[in-house]
Image 1 (cartoon, rainbow, N blue to C red):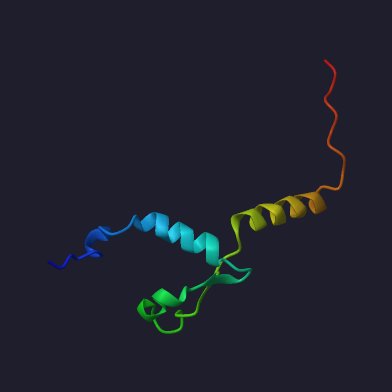
Image 2 (cartoon, rainbow, N blue to C red):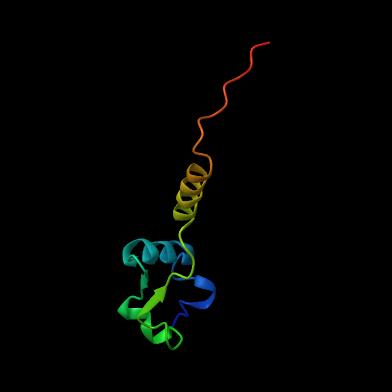
Length: 81
């Protein structure tokens, strides 16, 4: 008897596999596609998946630096009542 393992992800937990690939194959500019799944990837993306947006943590850091440059004044002190 032959079993169909990839029908509806019956062989593995798909999200766990994706997380493992992302964690283990991440580089500075994208994700290196593991050799075993390159034949299933679309043309142009069979070796590396480039990042297309900056990481959210980089965006937050840029916003903090931008705010710091705008308001170089010290914060206003609370008024006494």
